[in-house]
Length: 261
Image (cartoon, rainbow, N blue to C red):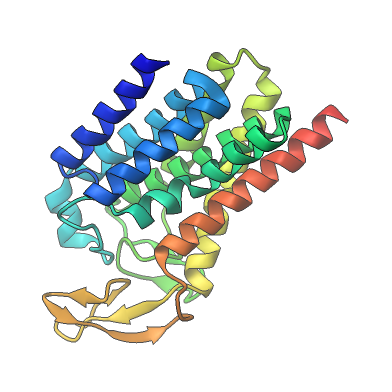
């Protein structure tokens, strides 16, 4: 146990050192890792690690090209913040606490599905933005700038399905479960990503850059303050991510109860 705790601490420190996470984000990730380990063992840490490592690598992959195309442009140069860590891992944290309070196998399925959702969403965003074709916005019913929430592309959709399957297969091998449970987690993760897209399209705040006139989700674009044109107060990308991971987890929990009943 001490070895694993030291490993979590070192990985968290390295994340801050290489500016993958801010210092606050690194501390939050450490606490998240410890609680997940206590609740779900070293296997739970591997699922957490798969999400974090693949997400970090994909965020850095072709970063310059993404910055030229992406309408978001929200990543802090100091790394992902504590709020961003909780947006993707907060639902998993709640499942771990729930499992510690009231032990039940369903918590483990829900836990995996929250990370299947977070992985699907991140892969869709980081890979989909590189599509050669402009994505289609499901609410505005037109092609929009890459990276805008509510927009979908075939490349991003395939990436989302692959990310959800990665967590599903990992769970299958780590916990020696069935193909049915694997599919339950993967499908729930993909549907959670769909929920993320719907929330982003209908509720998330959007702005227009006063310089380049591009639609964005950032308060600042091209070095200037943006103008809000749509969305509800406090309905940020972090809240959308957190909400979608909860939905993905709830879908998995419902499917699991239905499967075993």
